[in-house]
Amino acid sequence: MGSDALNALEKNIVAQLHARQSAMESDLDAYVAIPTGTGYEVGLAKFRVLLRDRFKRLGASVKEIPGDPKPAWITMPGQSADAAPPPCLQAVSASSSGPRHLLTGHLDTVHDPFGAFQSLRRVSLTRAEGPGAIDMKGGLVTMLHALEVLHECDAQVGWTVLLNSDEEAGSLHSGRVVRAISREHAQSGGLGFAMEPALTDGSIVIERLGSATFRLECCGRAAHAGRDFAQGISAVNALAGRILQAAALVDLPRGTVVNIGPLEGAAATNIVADRARAWGNARFRDASGEAKLLQGLRALETESGAPLPHTQLQYESNRPAKPASASVQLLAKRIQSIGALVGETIGFGKSGGVSDGNLMQAEGLTTIDTLGPRGGNLHRTDEFIELDSMAPRAAMLALTLLRSQNGIAGLDR
Image 1: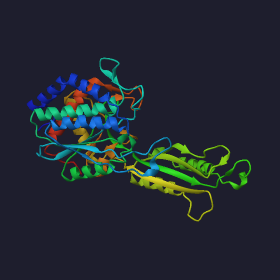
Image 2: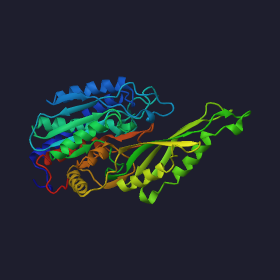
Image 3: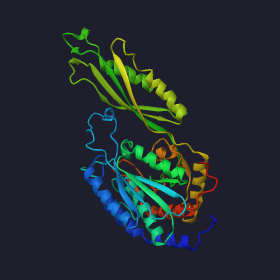
């Protein structure tokens, strides 16, 4: 099938999706109104039920896959341990024609389920603000409508949709499932598409840094700050030094970032602290960059028999880097050409942010992870979506899936 023009089926798909603009906006209103902040299982469960019913109407087989516990040490000050790992929702189309492609998304947002930012508010004819409107409920809306129109047009496309509820917290509960299902689809010749939002100008991300979470814990000796100060060994002071040493590992030209945020020390100012902790996030461009970074962090630890203060490192590499491989670049160019046919100007970009697309590609699945609509101000209380981008992005996704049903020759998996 040529890529320079739309055939009759494709024209019909595009027309039907544009005719659904009002329905897309209505769905977005309803989805944004469901509070789904990470860990808020009341809202997340309600959202899963709604989507499960919708996939069943497409004839898909639907199930929930249990999540895994996350490492206890990752729970930071002010956070409560998760009551139970949230499940993933998986829907598998009835069609078995050609390869089966994997579409992923997340139901959770970063927004407070009890905060003031609770609903979609139109600020112009083409723009609306709301919690999770662009990250990523708008992407879920475009995906659903694309799959529904393909189904209505009897386009035989094999797909699996996998939706998790902890992406914003690092997919620590769902990472194993995302990896396993991505690996299955890679081995069967499929492609990966994640419904994260496009960059503000509509560009798709073809390269991402990797990410890891770590904790530095220092142990000293407690003492009364007035009476026995000399007998104390401050874990807080030791941690302060370690934080500065960790910060020295930053190497922006090489794509290495170390950022330390939450801190935990003594309970009172008149006690020499015997324990202090710092949680941090690391970013890296590739495996060698991560190895060098981890070596630097490991150097901050003390040996078991060393005198106080002691330092211990906990480290969790949860998202490998996502390079712009030859297969990713080829898929991106094909999406670019399809985008031009539906009125979307598609450029290519890089991001220091991470997504489940990192996990998908790490398992050998050629993945583009910014197929969602245009928008901006992610994670803020003025997060917005460009409403008029939903229909063309849905059309772009539908045509990409349709044209990929027989595989894309030349993709180096």
